[in-house]
Image (cartoon, rainbow, N blue to C red; front, side):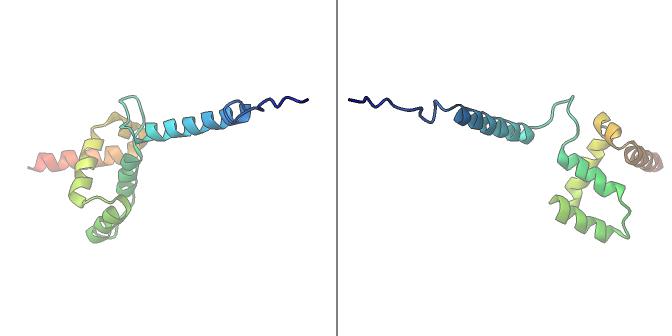
Length: 114
């Protein structure tokens, strides 16, 4: 007479446990990306995209505003609000010092003229 002993189930199989751990880790990383970055973190993807749009030369304001709407999904007003806040962010200066310093100079010159 033979006795049937249950074989390893899905939870007993070591390869299943590794796959579960990998899935959990991927989910955790995805949730971390959705959170707002802390003060020690780098710039968010949106902030980097705002600086990238500003870094580029534009033939006229219409093309730039269209790119802001299409690429970033922002109104031009919101874009400039975000950009102005970025100019005071040390992480932005570290990420793209040439663009940030140029924009700071322009902003300061305009403030002095008022």
